[in-house]
Length: 145
Image (cartoon, rainbow, N blue to C red; front, side, top):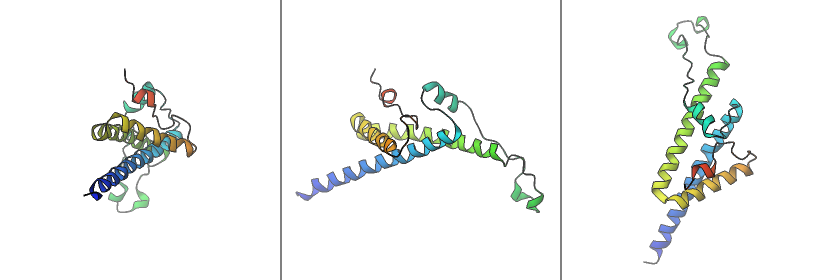
């Protein structure tokens, strides 16, 4: 039937658009977190340093466990804890993105993944982010050597 190939092609185009949008949304959040935290993601060393540390700050007491919430200690609930959570989120998003790229490579191949990543990076630049704000270096990511 002549409609089957067209429907299949439409599904592939939609899937590719979905892939690009997913990567773009992750990259935007990574860039925003990196900027807010003052973290540079421009080199492997900086990313490795970020990934090698755990930033979780444990609350000394669960406030909901105390009958009088206003009497519960607020240690660890300030900006340091919020920053630690943001650093953990950034680390998690970096891992998620690399796993997603790995999945895309398996699903659509190197050339299509390279195009998807390039389009997502172009959209990021059009939104006003500086090149590399999200830690993606296309040369480093798709180095063929």
